[in-house]
Length: 296
Image (cartoon, rainbow, N blue to C red; front, side, top):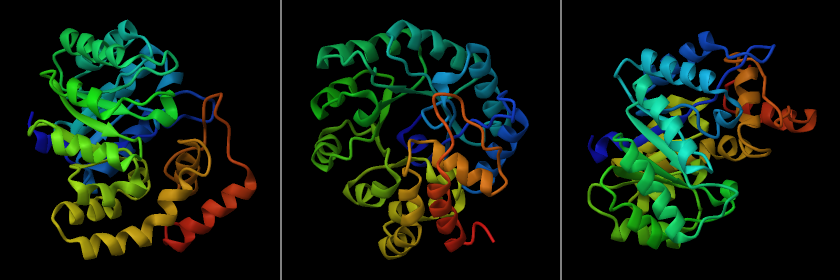
């Protein structure tokens, strides 16, 4: 795979559930087709937005297999496979590989709070065990620890670590990575509202939440920026900013699943410990969706 296969917009897919809590693979298929038809470049099932930590191994396998089947080689499928256990990460990655995923999204181990050497050895062990391309994921707001630029650049030297999803929101760290990374290493934003600014610094794209709701509109924004058409990208940025921001009025993926339920795309069902939004916040979300003509 080339860096180009890890550029543009990747959607961190929600996992739809039926009202009783079971997987809704029928809606999953519809969501994937909607993404493909609307210009998304990468599909990322079973990440944070997909509530992966609540899925059994069997459910995880079924979700990845469904996304691979419906994508049918048209888009790069990057399966979330991260855990705070290196061995567990490898076991999950093997499932994703067997299902036909093109690559893996591996988050920095959470809760354990590894040292810099621990982060390096984690990614090295996964890369040696699984031959698939690996996208490192740095999200200190979720994991409780930041993978520094220096450590990311060291990990980037591992042969099949091909990209990073950088969600630290630290622009100094981002610039240090972009300036010093290997030529064939892609840097992707993990923050929808910052993606335009970060692309202007040299990022290769974004792994997005908002593209669940508006795949075409957000893809158009990102590709305009990547093509250097910043006037068009900036206009779209301000038009869509309220939706990007309200998606995080509560913990992701609560708002985005609420919005998609309002839009008739999924049932509004979460798995504990996630619970529905308050009615007050839902009304604010509804107002934003109406303002963008996503609801009548």
